[in-house]
Length: 370
Image (tube, rainbow, N blue to C red):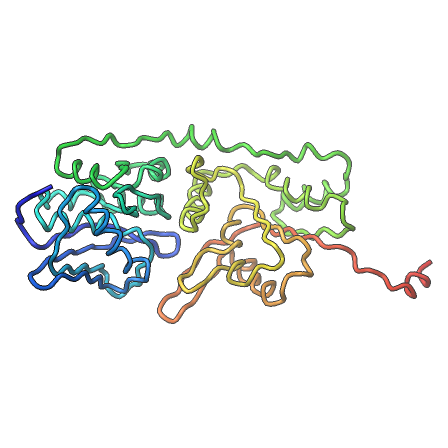
C-alpha cells in the first residue's frame, strides 16, 4: 500500500497497569531522516523492546509500507517502567499515522492497545477491564483492543469498546473506510450466568461436627484449621466453603476480576469472576508466588483469593518464611510489595482454611497411652 508522507510525528494514547489500576501512556512516534533504526525509549522492558521486530513484520505483512528511516518511539511518562507486548498496536498505528496513512487528529479520541502477531492479527492482553475503566474516567470516545478482550472490557459501564481482529481492521476504522460496531454487555445477565458453583456444600453427607465448624467460621469470616488423618474429607469440605459464603456483590466481583485480569488468570469464556475464588497452592510454593512479587510485581495467591478462600493443604509442609509472609495480609487485608523504584499494594481479603495430618506417635508413646 502506498501513501504520501504528510507528517513525521504522531501521538497515540495507550495504557498500562500499576497494581490493579491502569494509567494512561502517551506513545509518541517520530520518523526522521537518517539511517534506518528503531529505538524505543521510556523505560521499556525486554518485551517492549522486542516489539520493534513484531511491529515491523506486522506492518509489512499487512500490506503497508514499512518506514526505512530513523524511528524513535517514546513511552511517556518516561520515569515509569513499561512491560509487556501491549504497546505493539499503538506503536504500529503511530508509525502509520506519522507516514500519512490516515489523518492523525482522530487518534486523540481513542485508547488503543493490543499485542501483534507477525501477520498483523491481534492477541489478547492482560488488564483489559482496568484499562477500560481508565478510558471511561479519562473520557475517551472509545477503546480499541483485541476481540478476545472485548466482553471483559464491555463490562465497564460507560466505556465504548471497539473489538478488532487485526492491524488492517484498526487502520481502516481510523481512516473511516470501515465501521466497527461497539460491543455491548449486559452486566447483570452476565453476572448471573456465571454465578453458579460446580460443587455444593449440601453434597457432603455426614461429618456433622466438621460442617458445623465450617458454617460458624464462614458466618463470622473466621479462619479455620482442620486436623485429621488422610482420607477424612478435609480437602472436600474446604472446596465447598465458598458455596456457603455470602454471594458476591457487584463491587466485589469487579475488584476480583481486575486482579485476575492483571494476573492473566481470567478464563476466555468467563469475562467476570462472579463466584468467590478458591485458591489451593501446592506446599512447595515460594513466598513471591504466595504473597506476590517478582522483578515486575504480580499478584500472588493471597490476592487471587481476594473475597474468597485460600486453602493451605498440609500446612506444616509450607516453608516457614512463606507462612510468616501471611501476617500482613491476614491483619491488614492487603499486601504491599516494595521494590527499589516502586511500591505496589494489592487487595488480599480472604478466609484462610488450612489442613494437616496428626503428628505420628512414637511406638514408646503409643505404648504408654495404651
